[in-house]
Length: 201
Image (tube, rainbow, N blue to C red; front, top):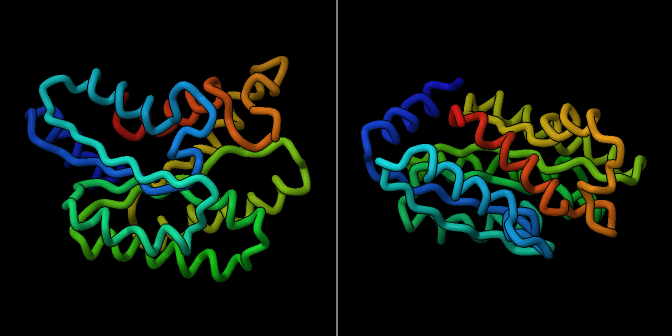
């Protein structure tokens, strides 16, 4: 666990105020499900640390890319968050964005968060059912983890967590909506569980 997260967990335990923001696409938004992964993360974290004054900002926009997220991050930082969970890649990959442009935009988001005195948690998203698209998407997810390593900030490799759990399922379709890309409530629950692991939950 990073020192950044240890400090946040210490603040939770001491009952301090912590503001956590989620910046992402339709997965952060929770598209076509009862609860998205960020909503589930929010509820479970508050339940695990009842003494803490944890507040949340959710900025998930369906269809958005890292470049569009870069245009929105300043408005989030004006709220003075302590943590910003950054979740992009699906739309970037699907729209054919060159990976170097994705890397540049994603890195700029993370650096802005750091400059705003907040901790970025760089999150991958879920795998997808289309094997060709999934192989291309894996390069984007690898880039996210590499940026986290470069900046020495936490990475939440939710795609890896998802894959480790899906091997136990007889029917992967239970995790995906009809498009084979957006998670169902079951899929969002997996993503939330992977994120919560970073916070000892």
